[in-house]
Length: 353
Ligand SMILES: NC(=O)c1ccc[n+]([C@@H]2O[C@H](COP(=O)([O-])OP(=O)(O)OC[C@H]3O[C@@H](n4cnc5c(N)ncnc54)[C@H](OP(=O)(O)O)[C@@H]3O)[C@@H](O)[C@H]2O)c1
Image (cartoon, rainbow, N blue to C red; front, side):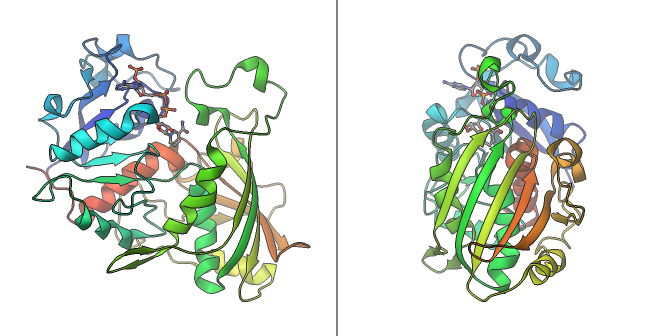
């Protein structure tokens, strides 16, 4: 297939840099344009970005001139990924969609819009068709698709097999979130070194709401949301990459730990046969060794796209308890968005000129 030309909005940020890293040598997509704030626009990328990835900045982007995030400056791309700061994403992403440039976004701004798919390809690929109800352009050429909060990704990936097999009654969780999730420079070192911070502002409300849309049912009139209470405590811990979750679940149809372990192991991803380049072979890996998963050992499994699960056991409160962990800036951000784009190509929503 002819490769699609893509742009990255927020290309200088932590998520933007992860996009650049993950898109090197991508078989379907070529980076054509980079956008950031007016502080960066006009500069070569190597000057504008404070490069924090652990590989050298790719030569293919180092000399690209950073553009303003205005749709008129991106008329040479087929679609854009957005890693924009949420304070500016609403207007900028709408500007691109109205100009007929599809936006695949990491920002939270459109996640709750009833016409915008909130997508994890292994969980709710059919929600993609919500795009047809968007009205940014008369001919449907411009639209927005979002991916969820970085804690919600491992949460819904592990809840999905239980939701399908038993139904979910209630969820209680505590997240232990890596510092890379706060962007750069992120959390002050004096706050986080040797410490745990018991609140991440704005995080818990996303964890309380996004799973219901993701686990909802697509109907002719939109998404019929799943309906169960979630109680989350979001904490920041001195880990570089990989958000760990301690999750306790109440099930509508009772099941014990071994049945739940089998349900997770036997669950078939609905996209497993599509051969999408960034899709993990096994979206969930269940560890039986009680020392695992650990962020340092397992965040990079399957190129950072796998959710690791461990310590599945019967709970004293509700029914089942386990830990889950996924790479927050890969599976929970840029990698998740790239997989969304691959599914959109496969479903015919993204095409070259
Ligand atoms: N970090 C994560 O793990 C994670 C996970 C999931 C989702 N997200 C979401 O992804 C987005 C990016 O997060 P991040 O951690 O990469 O943040 P970040 O490091 O602060 O980067 C923000 C980006 O937005 C650009 N920007 C800021 N103001 C702008 C403006 N007025 N016009 C155009 N561009 C502007 C910045 O450009 P300049 O460099 O020119 O200022 C930079 O490229 C956020 O919405 C965040 O909530 C992050």
